[in-house]
Length: 73
Image (tube, one colour):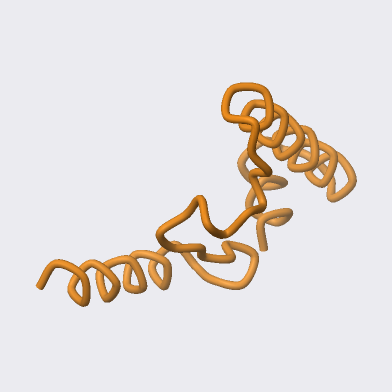
């Protein structure tokens, strides 16, 4: 799903979109490692994790709203 979204948004082919996603993920991974000495994939760092490759933006919003309601009423 992310590959399709990036392909459309940036006018890239599938391969180009995958490379862009990988580059962005690598930058994020290195940022967290450098500044926080943590592994960005560690689920302990996050309150909620939503796989945007498996969920639409609307589904993600609904999940966030449900989680916020559970936690904060």
